[in-house]
Length: 349
Ligand SMILES: [Zn+2]
Image (cartoon, rainbow, N blue to C red; front, side):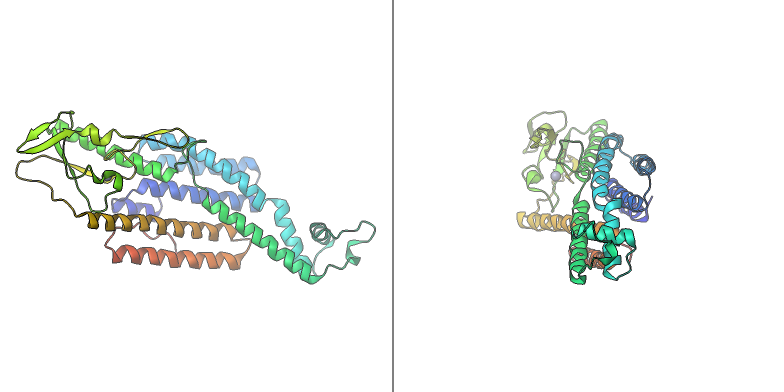
């Protein structure tokens, strides 16, 4: 297991989401390197399967293991299809041919490829006697590299989805699943210990979805009533709220049960009532949380761009890498300044 993931585990963060994200980056880079090295499909397929098997082995949640068995091969297929277009033999050859022609060192085949690409081939004249204007080669080579880097940027945006129709990425699925399992264990522990009444303990960076449910008293077994002057209602009221995605998938998306919910339950005791957190504090903390996720995406995007363009355009790769390092520093500084836990450093300097 990579150090960053081990660190996330030690810090009690959602390391399984990070593990899935890391596997996605590994698959992209592995496929790119393999295509550039002209590996046969069979070998690439085997290598990808090994990355996926390793991921499934390292995951803890049985449900996530099963979901990744479906999602990751679909993801890898999509990355492969796109990568063949971007990094496939012909494209790479055109680049080499253009570069060689630009410095006047093209061999016969390269010269012909460059001429064909620039649409100035004439079958009646030997390639060597056709003069390609240097300006035209430079423009074509620059355009071509630009095109490749645009496609690489697109590749860096692709994320694993749960299945063909889903718009929900696997990171969010992992977020949902891990919280849900934690809550199930907690519910079992609480009702096993004879606690039917529980608080949903308020936390400051609460989502809008959860805000109206937090700080109230609930019954796990679904009763309603009053105790010590405090109303309680069935816990299902808060948890069993369903949302339908555009693709028609139905998700549980209530408090405790929903995406990224970080609420905790606490057994009722007569003397203790959890203190409410002012709405302004809640809004501020939520903003910090959303900003952190956005900054993390930026780091990953540039890290992937750097790795995917390396071996093709090393100057651009270095620029992307530097950008990833810079964004990562911003992310860590932002998290520290706002007293928020952050995922360990993902970019090696
Ligand atoms: Zn919540």
